[in-house]
Every structure is written in structure tokens, then in C-alpha cells.
Image (cartoon, rainbow, N blue to C red; front, side, top):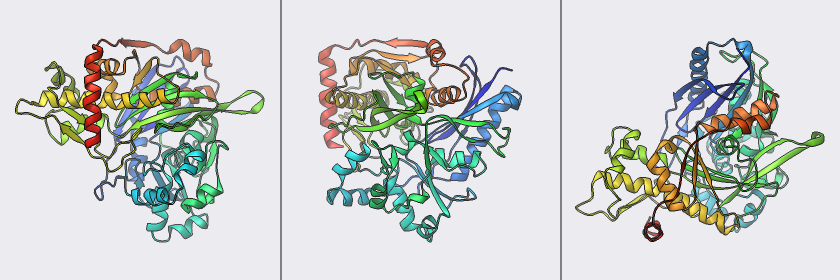
Amino acid sequence: MPPIIVTIDQGTTGSTVLLLGEDLRVRARGYRELPQIYPRPGWVEHDPEAIWRSVVEALGEALEQAQCDPSDIVGVGITNQRETTLCFDRQGRPLHNAIVWQDRRTAPACQALREAGREAWLRQRTGLLLDPYFSATKCQWLLDNVPGLRARAEGGEALFGTVDTFLIYRLSGGEAHVTDASNASRTLLFDLHECAFTPELCQLFGVPERALPRVVPSQGPCAWTRGVPGLPDGVPIAGIAGDQQAALFGQLCLQPGAAKCTYGTGAFLLLNIGSRAVLSEAGLITTVAWQRPGPGGTIETTYALEGSAFIAGAMVQWLRDGLQIIGSAAEVEALARSVPDSGGVVAVPALVGLGAPHWRPEARGLLCGLTRGTTRAHIARAVLEGIALQICDLAEAMSAAGQPLQVLRVDGGAAHNDLLMQLQADLLGVPIVRPELLETTAVGAGLLCGLGVGLWSQEQLQACWRVQRHFVPAMPPEQVREHRRRWAEAVQKA
């Protein structure tokens, strides 16, 4: 069999493993769901051992499907839920559950720093805002609340990292404690301009520098497998990127001005802004998109503007599990199509607060405009409209930063929903492009890996990206304005 790239996509609700062939087609796919842990209201955790098991089992399923010879595997790429924070010992054993990116327990710590006047300085250094979303206050909480952890971290016995760090540590048999710049830039400990963890940032949050991973480029070998079930030893791990940056790469948004939106648990709009870290004044964050080898042994950094809506596909899951008005997520489109509009109902998907550009962790989900005539179909349609309207707010913020969208590439599970995509085109006022392969998060890490081991060239990647469908704006302008007006009023109430 031709060469195979193994791509691990470790997400919030599960782990996917794809086997990519030399022609960039998916040869096999494995998936395992990941249990969610909710110790208290607003707290979200994962068991790191469950994360590892889900990856190993998904890998085993994919390898069994493909029936490939292990010697055909030439590289491993990794993409991951980003801000989720773990601590483990030098044997790779977890020292606490992972604190998930959705977790809000550190809101008081963020507020204290904000009141101390540190947010503007942090934003200038890191490109981020003070929010429980990011990793630094999660590290701080673990150090302050897990008995003995601070002493172990200061003594070099306890290690911190995001999910990519933990997986690479396990995949390499404990040889490599690393992360890439795209993940590091989500921590509030990483200077966006120096592209490094810095003493000043670590001191502010009380995080020992020696407990943090080494930062490596997103493309190129950084570790080699050892003792992984199903994989031979010595396979290079040669592609790493946080999930949204990986999706940007997988959508081949390689030039400044190119943008994508991933519709998963949350929705994430990223715009390539090139080699300069432009800061937003409108509630967006600036992040490292990726680092890749440049001429003469240099490392080239590409940046992105990002807007994050914390709840997107999870709102449809809430219709299924919370309200129980649908039996499966796939049913929502037909139900929403059964009515011509939402009947005046507006849904604000602020189930865990509002992300960009509002950054209101205290906000809560809202259904308004209900009447005696409201049906479950109206609510379903309002939910889809609410998901799309969040993205409109993000696009407006990008326009305010001098980066208006011209076209938007889409991916993620909810991008299968034709009605949602048409509503997005209508309300956004720009064409939507959906590729053939919607698992662009996993594919992006695989592409970085394939480039990193020399399996293909960038020109080959461009030739293999295929469009499945275009969605063109069709809603009358006055109708769009009315949607936006009702949405703005509802957001203020959330």
C-alpha cells in the first residue's frame, strides 16, 4: 500500500483518527466518544486516561479498517481541543482531571486581574483577552488546589500542557514534552511577538516555567513514536496544530484575507492575517495560526484573527438532550424547514456565556419572542438562526479591524446542514463555500505532517482541495436587517 499519514483529532466530545493516503483521500476512519465530567455548575472536566483510551481505540479501529502494513505509516499529525489544560508526572500519569476550555471556574481570578488593570498589558503581549477560556488561570487553579502540585511543578516533577502535549508525551513514551506555537498562543503565557513563553507572563499567573513544554514548529518532526499500540516505533510526529488553526490550514486558507468557520461544539471564525500580529479593538483575539520552516533554516510565523462562539452544534444537542424536541441532531434541519420562519422567536446560544466579540461569561442562553403559536419547529429554526447570527457578529468585528470577509469556507459537523449554511450566507451577505471533505480539522494536521515528512508539496495540496457546494446570499436586505435588529436586542437581554 502507498504511504499513510495517521491524523489524530482529539476534540471536546470525542477522538477521531483518519488514515490519509498519498492522494489526500481518507483511507479509514476511527472514532470514540469522550465522556464529559461536570463536577459543579460551570465546571467541565475530562479524564486524561479517557482521552488517551479514546485515541488508542479510534486508532485501532482505523488501522483495522485499512488493514495496512504498519511499515506504510510515514508520519503522525495531531490536532486538539486547544485551551484544555492538563498536569501529569514524568511517567505520563495524570495528576488531576483536565480542565476543559468551556470551564468557567476561574472567572473570579480573571476579574481580579482585570480590576488590577492587567488586561491591556496582557492583550498587547498575548493577543488574548482575560477570560476563563484560556489556559493560564486553569494552570493557576490546579497549582493552588491540587495538594502538593506546586512543589512538584517547581521541582520539575509535574508537567503542564494542552492536550497535544499530553498525547505527544504518551505517543513518544515520555521522551518529548512539547507543544506547537498555535497551541502555546492560547495559554496567556506565550508572548505573541517573541513567540515564546516568557518569565513575566509566567510570574503573573504563578506558573513555573520549567513545568511548561518546549515550543516547536507546527510542521516538521518533533518526536517519534514509542510503545504505541498498533504503531511501529520510530514514526515521526511531524504535524501539530490546535483544532481551529488546523482547520484553517486544512481549508488551504494559506494567504492573508482567506477565512474559514468551523461549526462544531462551538463555532470558530478564523482569518489569515499574514506575518504580522495585528491586534483587534473589537473583541477578537489574535493568535498564531502556524509556524513552518522558511528559507535558510528560518521559522516563518503566520497569524490569524479569531472569533469564538462557545456554543454552536452544542445548541442542537441541547434541543435533543435538554428539551428533547428532536431525537437526533440530524433531525433539526427537516424540523426547521417545516416552517417558513421562526415566528419571531430568537435563540441566543449563550449556554456557557458569550464569547467574542462580547466576552460576557455571565450571559446565559435565551429564548425570546415565544407566543401561544410557537412550536418546536419555530424553536429549531431560531436555534439555527442564532448559530448563524453569532458568526455575523464576529464578521462585523473583523470588518472593524479592516479585514472584511469576501467569501467564507466552512467545515465541521454542523456544516452538513444545508439550511444553516444558506441562513449563514443570507445573514452574512457573502458566499459560503463547503468543501467535499468537512473533517478539515483532522485533514489540516495531516497536511502539515505530510509536508513535514516530504510526502507531498504545497502545490499538490492546492490541486486536491475540492468544492462540494456554494451557498449564495438570497434573503432580501430588509429581512436581514430585521433579523439583525431582533438579535441585537436579544443579546442585550442574555
